[in-house]
Length: 222
Length: 328
Ligand SMILES: [Zn+2]
Ligand SMILES: [Zn+2]
Image (cartoon, rainbow over all chains, first blue to last red; front, side, top):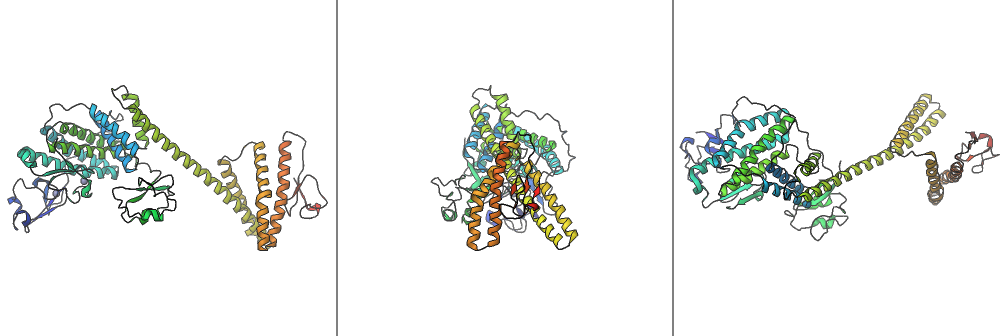
């Protein structure tokens, strides 16, 4: 009997113990858990778990391709300007500058409204971008940030890489199950790291960034 | 350490309000519960006393964000671009999950750009960004130009205030150092004379050399603080300084010393007071005759510090014999 550890939140599934309160009897082998079983803490699917004896590798050890630095940082798109402004609005809020925060929020709203719309949006396009982030974006960014000893960047990368993997497993499940997956259950977003939780109530603390549940926002339908 | 002031997190405040009780300036006592930054003296008593941990001390000036390497900026930017595309796609998909994904990507992207050099709204990066918005985007329809201009103004003001504050602080420090070095100079001179009397020649020499060194420091601090003007202005300043001493400062000191029965101090203060009055008069004369070319000689009484323009029979202040006077 072994143990399996969630690479997103650290939850451990113990085959010997099972999870009796969720109807999984003791001595249920990992292989015998249903394919759509997800981490009870963070909702990550089975592929995000590692057997405890194997070290948890955060990313496959493909050779990392470093992007050559170039001097001309490209111009920001309107949506990126909106993101920058809403980030600065948060910065002002943290420093208790409500007037400046409101001005940045106004700018963020304007640039979000004028941003171009996506061509033929669908979930497959999202998955393609997520896969690219996980296979190239994060390994490359982690490598250069580690080299630069940039702790702030490394911290942001750890959080968003975990959240990105959660998004991947959520979308994959959603494509199989459709809206049935969301019936009679709530959808919560951590406003600090972006972690998404599907369940009846937000987790006590965010499994990714560890903030308390009042930092979660319940998402209502469009 | 940078100056701090208190802020209250209204979401945590349980209105137990020990802060009202401990605040020495009444800054926490406001109708809307927002602590009055103008009254707050940064003592931190309220933050220590608050039972709900709702008050924290925040710095007036934040240290700059760690500089970012170009490689990190590029990598973070690539991810930012991907997250913004995902936000854009999710924004147009139906359903609660898509809406959550849209939000999630916004939050991740904000965090990434924060760590790509945009942590602080008052940073230079932010100012450059706002300026470039004005330059490049203001032709766009409905562009909220006023908001951008207000923000630029708000942060410029902050920065100017910070800068002024820091400059003033350094001037204060220079003057404090000037005072300290000046005192050290006179102290070591006194020690040197004492050592000389005791026949401790080497100690006397060291004290004299150190005393001269402190003079060098003091003069430099004073100069860097920008306190040296034209000779006419310096004479005016000297008149004012000596006048203050003989009219206000020493009379009070003398009274206090008399009340305490400290006769030596009474004499030391009285000599100085009378001499400063003479100095004020002489400075004023020198100012009036600043452009006279005929040479004037001054004679200093080595006991009380009186200065005359001739050799008196004896000092009019302390009575010492005129042949002791030193010619300048
Ligand atoms: Zn988990
Ligand atoms: Zn979180």
